[in-house]
Length: 166
Image (tube, helix red, strand yellow):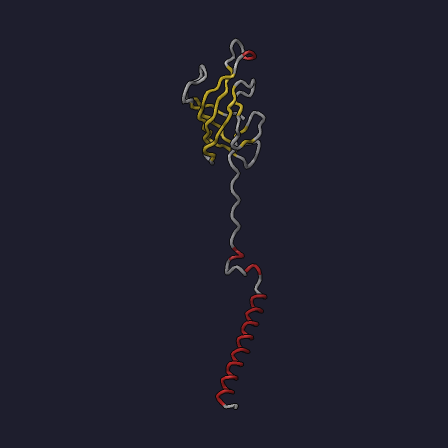
């Protein structure tokens, strides 16, 4: 039995199915034709790329090589009689760097070639970053402060600051 009501319902369902199929096809076509630059949304293609992170400030060693968080640092470049060892860096930032370690100092008794290296616990602070003329775009620490929480090597005071010349 085919009644007029059944034909209308069937016709309506079929019509809805065709409309849905056409809408899906139109949506797929619209998505496929969107340029990649605009796919992420309005303005996504025009957002500036993030700025690269600035290079870290360095400390320059006796061989004029840049170092970041070195485990050792030679203080006496001429004769090698004073070296920071076992450095554990707590901070390394754009203005200062701090570490703890050991200052190995030759006592030079009776003379330096026959002397013994003695350990002194030390707190190290690097500061005063400046542009490094030899390496454009690079900044280097220019001051080192050594604080000896226990004994300091003779005749050095417990708190001493040196200018780094390299």
